Amino acid sequence: MKWRALDAEPCSIARTLSFVGDRWSLLVLRDCFLRVRRFEEFQRRLGVTRHILADRLKRFVEADILTRVAYQSKPERHEYVLTEKGLALYPVLMAMARWGDTYMDDGAGPPLRYRHRPCGRHFTPVMCCSECGEPLDPRSVIVEPGPGLDADAARLLPPTPQSALRKGGAVS
Amino acid sequence: MKWRALDAEPCSIARTLSFVGDRWSLLVLRDCFLRVRRFEEFQRRLGVTRHILADRLKRFVEADILTRVAYQSKPERHEYVLTEKGLALYPVLMAMARWGDTYMDDGAGPPLRYRHRPCGRHFTPVMCCSECGEPLDPRSVIVEPGPGLDADAARLLPPTPQSALRKGGAVS
DNA sequence: TGACAAAGTTCCAAAAAGGAACTATCGTCA
DNA sequence: TGACGATAGTTCCTTTTTGGAACTTTGTCA
Image 1 (spheres, rainbow over the protein chains, first blue to last red):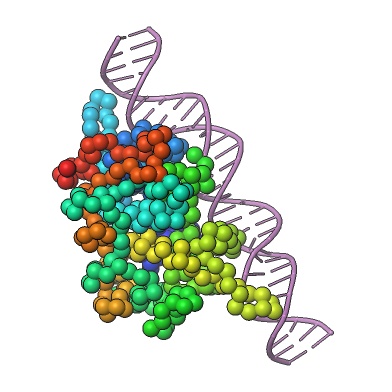
Image 2: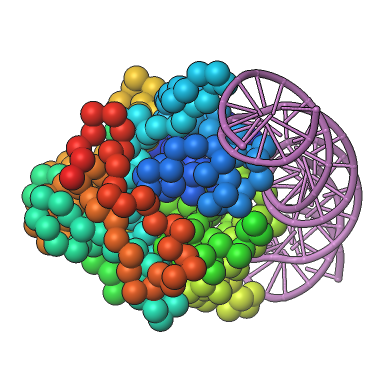
């Protein structure tokens, strides 16, 4: 399958990956969330080659994930700022940070900690159910076809009734 | 920067990306969460070339994200099942699904819907603060150095005091 | 005038992915 | 017995994507 064809797949994960499923995209966005805004600073921090960085920034701007804002003229200089659509990728990055903190810790503890301004405490991000607020367990989630799933694409569905995710896992 | 060197970066997102930051890894895992377990079925569903699939599965097994379980002998056949470490990547995938549902909807609505078995309702995944339970807004999170951040790596930190994430965003 | 900075662009070599065919083991069926 | 199918890979070659370094452009500052 061709790579950029992913955005036509009837799967929201595949569509998201058509933007961020490569070596550098999410690291560029991580830096955006850390208030990095300028080409040179992305390049210095990430060590990515310049033409890859230019390409990723261009694609993000085209996708309205970043906007290019002039911060001076003569010569014209721009910086890259997250849009609302870009800010909405925050849970993806926090989920990765959490996983890395848990499983890729080198023994020294997490490199960064996060403090929640409203409650004032250090926290970890937890993925919760929008309806009941409980933390999500993959074994407690039932996947169902949605309105955007055409008949042909039903191959993407899991078997019914849904089997256990693993030996000993919960079954309906 | 060399790609696999990412796992040595003092950043949990970079370390996580050293496993899942490529074209196919997260799609393989998506299928694992949909109860796909066998080589042929991954290959058929994803359209990925066979040697890439073999390589990704091998790497996941080596990383203890999947385990290889025999389901018959003569000839020996194995299937791939998520470990706890692999199951812990669920929030990453759900965050991507949510973003795709929101921003990559082709007008037909989401391809899949999720029902939370404990409360019985369709839900969307929401990233929340572990301490107060409120949904996270990137503009309300303060990033601080953690114990795993050596002095040299402090370059990864954002400027202090932390500037606004975007024009009009909240500032401390 | 010459050095410097920011933001790219260009060129070539190296690595990774795509595509198709090939291999190996065993069971089944004629 | 021998062909065929299923499963799970492996091999070979081509195309695409990255890595690395140098080069360009526009304007400031000493």
